[in-house]
Length: 171
Image 1 (cartoon, rainbow, N blue to C red):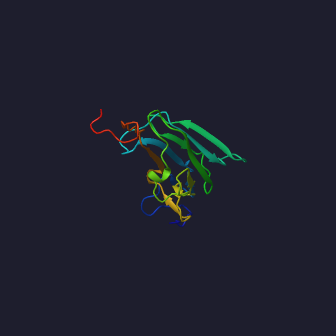
Image 2 (cartoon, rainbow, N blue to C red):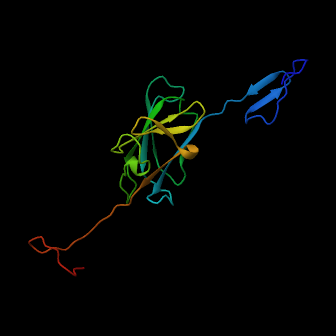
């Protein structure tokens, strides 16, 4: 509310980053944040040693660039690097030892492309990270943290006779 002398006062609580000082409303800019993590198939523990690549035009850049990083125990955090409204393509380029590269659709069932080879993400002006769905709509990512789940390698051994028939009881 503006008082008779021009001084401003707030009715109720102000949002975070907004202050009123005498006759001036100040709004602090905050950098957008996004995090990328690799977990085991059930999401209970981090998987280290996989490699991700993120392509797009990053904040402050004029041309498309690429950022590549290995996964670690903590999620890879990016602050102020995603430009609002621009799309970025996330790809897993190498699996961690003992794991396979799982399709992004294992973690985000309705993501595009349907083969799960990549995940397209976008940051909104409000700082919300979303992924592109198969229908072309954008689905918010909770906590702005992309969590990609991978399955461990599996090896099945079978004993067969010379004709290729399974041998019962073989160990």
